[in-house]
Image (tube, rainbow, N blue to C red; front, top):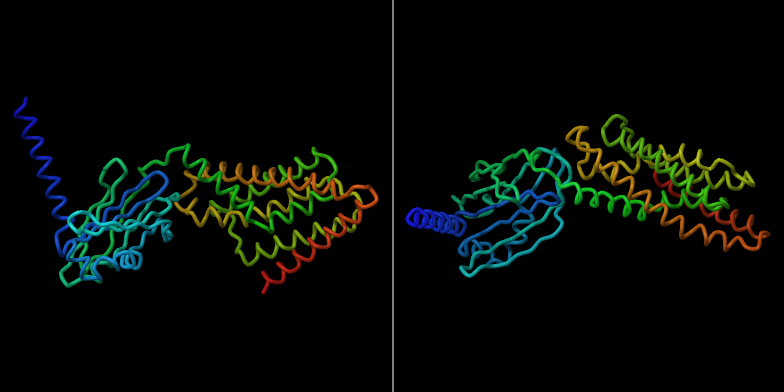
Length: 341
């Protein structure tokens, strides 16, 4: 038993030493791509001699950023963070972290070999966080990419939920046109019940078209959607001026919410949601919409009391609502012209 353990230990040590030697062998670099549940991490390792050949290691980070591309279902993944370090042998390591959206086919393209000395090779490994190998290939001057199916690498529910929930909150808080439309609706409301109805109707409506647009059932170009969103803002401001006491505001927000949902869809499509089919979009859509609803409710709870305070006494209510509506019309008109050109 002890003999078997000793043999096994020796084999493991030999394998580790071999792997270390390969990663630091001049003329041979190693590119290790790890697929996590929230991110994809790529680490390039260059031997000291190879690092010196591109500028004593100082130019390695730029080399990696310029030479490495990750594509998921036809969409290029943007780099989120980068870090670099050297080990005790002088080898240089450069790490790039990418956000992992939904998708199946991962393509890793590396032109590092072509930027190194002639005859350089690169061992590309794509594996999961737990070490399961998905693809391994030796790249050279004639071959610079490989593909791996990452559909089997599951995304943990909790992390994915909060990821898209936060995206929904952030998207509505930075979506000034959506917020201005909502503020134009809320400025004439006098009861919290009407406020909650209007906000919730807006969420329900854009949830419908968001799902249809993300899955590709409804595809309307942004050059049409964006001017329509601006037009909805103008319409709300004009209605505030024409109607002294607008009623059933939830119907208005529901109708225009269908249009705004087409605009929201861009945020999810940019992350690849829906690119791999209709089976993996329920969670992103639900959590994204909950985030949008939470952001809208938070904004409503802040601005509605302010609107009511600015409308005191009652004689100034009409003047304030009218002045605010004129601002809404002006901003909406500007966006409409800008987006129509």
